Each structure stands twice: as C-alpha cells, then as structure tokens.
Length: 77
Image (cartoon, rainbow, N blue to C red; front, side, top):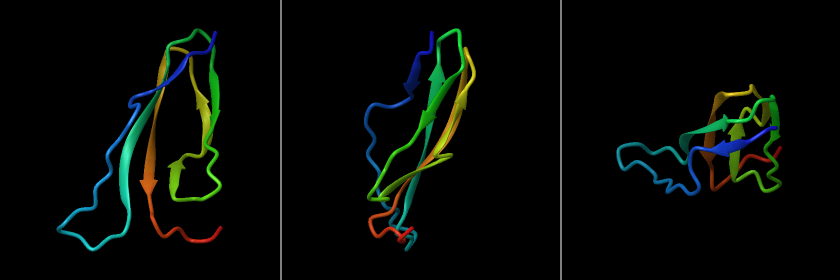
C-alpha cells in the first residue's frame, strides 16, 4: 500500500520586505507511510507555482523534501 501525504495542507507565502525578489519558496515534505514506494507528479499548467522536483518516487516509510516556488509572473515554458 502507498500512502503519500504532504507536510502542509495550506501555506501562506509572503514576499520579504528586505529583498526585491518576485518569488517565494518553501519546503514541502512528501511522506510515504505505506509499505511500497510511491510515485508522484506535480501538474501545473499556469506555472505560477512550481515544485522541484516535479516528479519522483518516495520510498516506503520514507520522505522527500521538495521546493515549492511561487512566482506571480512566471516565465513561459
């Protein structure tokens, strides 16, 4: 059985007042409490939010930290 869970159900991403960057990043952990490896794929057509890696495998009873980035003016791709 595969049981993938995100470390957060919601997140509040805020821009830093000290920096002029137009992106915000946060780490999201994908945990697999199942007894089999689980694959995931991040699907996002508008590209406002990106996940790195976009797809991968989380081992049984393991986790993978991913970088979630918010960019309100995404680069075409």
